[in-house]
Length: 249
View 1 (cartoon, rainbow, N blue to C red):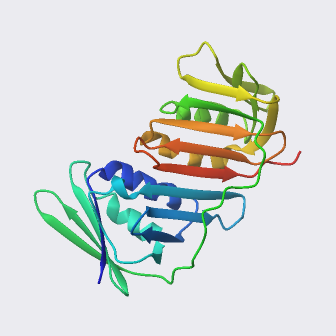
View 2: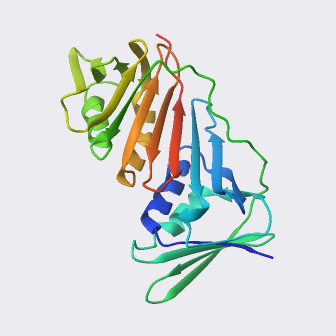
């Protein structure tokens, strides 16, 4: 029996799938009759990883008899999903060899894509002892990254008990973005110990795009370790998580 998923939160769903396509062209999703949809994919250069969790209640319809791992070309899927308006619903119907995408509004559009072989995976968190973190309102995060990119290609991220700071320099110029306890966009901050690491701004620019669909985001680091960046999507348990390797200097 074909599996069928339907969403009416079209903007959030498309943005969640786009978050994957920002790093990988092809990946495997897991659809489970009890838990919903999940994905974990490592970027080809092994510099970054993306994980997406959309629990069963996120979907208006979630019909599947058994757990399945399904390979998808996300580049092609996103081309189709971007044609859907936020007021339209999207249904995904999976049979043995294809995925049918139905976009329903004032009329119905159907697209059929071939399925790829899916590789079973487990959702694992990176084994990093994060020593500091901050949670912020995320709508302005892409703009912060663009401010930093005016100056350099790498950014030092620093978190202590009082502030989250981004610093970059280049061509004799320095750029600093600071979010302190007094700033209204800072929702929470903690630090077992002050921490800082350097990361690629090119990757962070891509990873900033889900801010458009998220309620808030968290950033967690330790000194000279990978970063964990997690977007909360406004539905219990629904999130997008990125891990980004630090740069050795």
